[in-house]
Length: 120
Length: 113
Image (cartoon, rainbow over all chains, first blue to last red; front, side, top):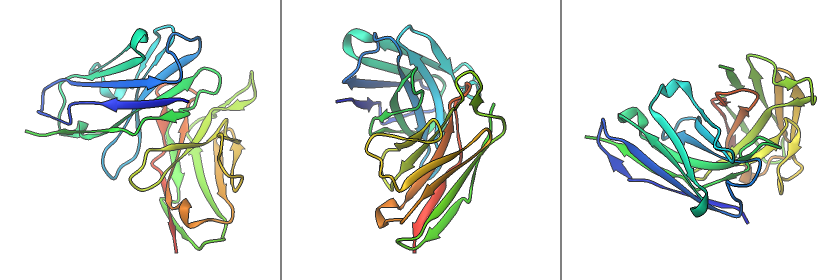
């Protein structure tokens, strides 16, 4: 069965780099058509897509975050990563990773999310 | 970017009633080569992770009860919840995956009277 779980620092200070890890099972990012996306949600607000990475290492980013995002993967360990540089309080949110495939294209399995607070 | 507008922002219904949620896109989500609308719906219950409900605008995700029905094409889409249950209390989001950046609507909060 497919499962995903996010991990992160919990709290960090403005201007630092946020590093998030998504550890998953039940599928492989070396399999044709598989992908992982990152989505975030500030408390009480809506969902914002951040980035996708695909089995062939294709990467897509939300341009609203300019060049602050870097997505990557480690297929051997079934992990995907997201880094956000120069964080500020507006980056305080719950961060989700989710599986996607290039057949149905929607986020069909989600992790429980990890809460990140940016505070001085 | 494709803008997604959901309405109403909140709605309250009684158990057993039917409710219709709207999702409108700033441009067509219909890809003519496969005749599919690149639109999904998600349900997020209080304190929980979003869960997929509908993909390709009309297909139910595995295990979703048939009281949830997605319809529409092009730029106008609806999620109809028939015979609403107390457990349907949630926020509902639609998402376009036609082009990057992927975008979500701002959500509709379903409350139970």
